[in-house]
Image (cartoon, rainbow, N blue to C red; front, side, top):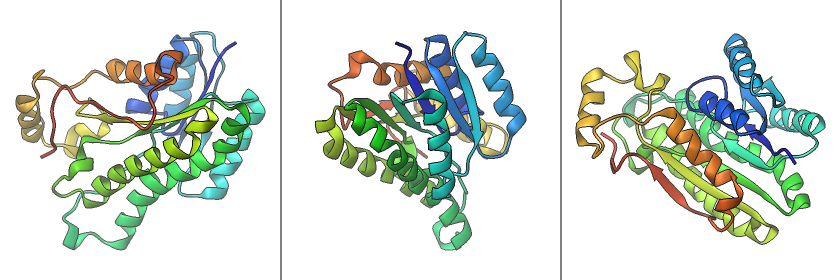
Length: 247
């Protein structure tokens, strides 16, 4: 039977790589985007070439009612769900003393609260099935990162959320885990988002001396969503190339 995946933030970067890799592996996939419909449509078109069902919806994960509506639409279209990937995330750079309420709320709301809303929306179906995978996408910055107080706090919070769900719903056959990506070629590490000097500095301290490849991260996601990861629950797994800190 074809498995079904729901993933937030699937129109670019890590999310898009996961959508395409899952489709190539035979998964039906529903994913969300926040604003760029044309980018989402392009991802859906590429993923559909693998012959599985691909759908996409606009979603602001900070809006709990919108999350519930999209979850209901996904379940109506796909009939059930086997894996839920909380990947949507944003960042607002700035030192803690100068960060305004709006930026703090946007980052925490998207990265942490939004992930809670998504999990809450799908938990009844997962519990009814007595099986399923939940995966949170944290960050190497969860240990603290200069100029990223909100982002680091939100990504650290995902660990606590995931490990709580692992304890609460493990008895129902649902595993919940966290992936901690290092530096990968995404919007957050390109252009003005990350200075070339800082990128070079991080690479020089990574034991593998390079950025990660998105297909490597997607493969880790698919493993944790597969049958072989059935006894991995409440784990925080680094996919960092051995880099154990953030600048």
